[in-house]
Length: 372
Image (cartoon, rainbow, N blue to C red):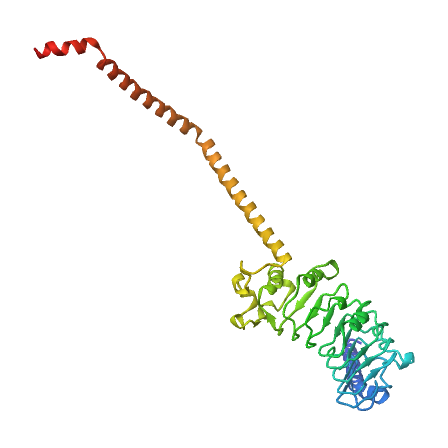
């Protein structure tokens, strides 16, 4: 019995090793065959399907509409270089017949999208990021993004050149975006009405902004946009006195403009290429000979008042220090005054004694007799 125990233990270890090997082979087989099975079961034609996470990519394919046979478990969908032109209602969910409940990322760059209809993205309840860049948008319905309660990032870079601010503001009104990208749209002013409340990042790079007015800056400082970060690189900033509100705003809260150190002046010629944060007040041309605007005059009065207050505080501080010195040296000062008084008294007594000697009549009468 004692000799059989090692043999039984060895057989048990061998069986366990075979079981682990079979489990490993089974797992590797499933891992390798899963993409093939998925491609054979639900991958659209002319598209590529990947797994972990589920990703469908359709690049440079002349699609006239979104693929109708998208797998239900897709999480990331990229369609680039197509000719979708019009996105109708529930365009990616087959009018509600095949909702894509797991889709969180949708990339639709360079798809010649010109019209986005009402509830075009309905049936995508998990959509968090949508990229519509490089599309010549001409019409955008007010409820185009309804049905996407989790949408947090929207990219519209070079997509608004043919679309006004009013349609954009209507489409973004009820969204809870955290990041909005509007780069390369030739914007000349801040799209204030189009900014949804609670927005945290706004990309306005490569536009036509020459600066921001005090009213626009006040809109950014309001409570709904108090945490907003603004990206302004590659804008033709005009560095004259009109830029001073923006410059003060950036210097007072540098975190509001993360790319502030890369901003350069485009005009006038004297400061072209100069880093905006390194500008001095005299370089902006805000001299005394120029008539100040009402808001600038008020700001100057506030600065002057603050200077007077600071000067008064300094004088008061000097006075307090002087009084403290006098108080701490009161004994020495008293001793010095007593010594001075004694010295003066001695001097006056000396003068008084000499005066009495000079006016004595006996000394005056003795003078002639002494001469004889």
